[in-house]
Length: 194
Ligand SMILES: CC(C)(COP(=O)(O)OP(=O)(O)OC[C@H]1O[C@@H](n2cnc3c(N)ncnc32)[C@H](O)[C@@H]1OP(=O)(O)O)[C@@H](O)C(=O)NCCC(=O)NCCS
Image (cartoon, rainbow, N blue to C red; front, side):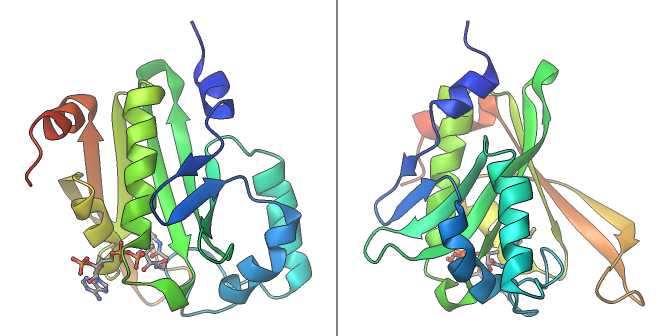
C-alpha cells in the first residue's frame, strides 16, 4: 500500500479551470516577495518579508526543503505566481491534517482560493484517502472563513483567548475552527447542493 508521502509525491501538480497548483521554486521569489512584503497582504498569515533575499531563504528552507503537501498557485492564463496553499500538522496515524493559504491581494475576491482549495480537498479525500481536514482562522479575518464555508467545511468551534496577536500584542485572538470529515465530504459529493 502506498504511504501518504508517496501519494503526495505523485500529486505535486493539481490543475483547475484557471489555476495550476505546483511546487514553489526559487524562480517564484520575486512574485512571492511582491505580496509577502506587504503588511496588509500578510496581516493574517506571517510577518512581512523584509527583502527578496528573505523570501528566497523561506522558499529554500520551507518549500524546497519540504515540498510535499505545499503548492504554489499559478494563474494559467499569464503564468503569474499568485499565492500558496500548504498542508500542515499531518497526523498520519489518524489521517488528519490542517491546511492554510495566502493569495496576492491583487487577486482577492475572484474565487481563486476557493478554486484552489476545492482541488486540494478532492486530492485530500479521494487520492490521499485522509479522514479529517482542519482549518482555522482569526475571527477578525472573515474572508478566510468564507473560503472554508464555500468549500463545504463545517464550523467546529470557537476558541476564545487562543493567543496574543503577534502583530498587535494588545489584542487577544479568538480562533474559529472548521473541519471536514471524509463522511461529510463524500456525502456532499454524492448529494451536491446545485
Ligand atoms: C483568505 C484569502 C486566501 C481568500 O482568497 P480569495 O481568492 O479572495 O477567496 P475567494 O474569492 O475564493 O472567496 C473569498 C470570499 O470571502 C468574502 N470576503 C471577502 N472579504 C470579506 C470580509 N471582510 N468579510 C466577509 N467576507 C469577505 C468574499 O466576498 C468571498 O465570498 P463570496 O464568494 O461568497 O462573495 C485571501 O483573502 C488572503 O490571501 N488573505 C490573506 C491571507 C489569509 O488570510 N490567509 C488565511 C489565514 S487563516
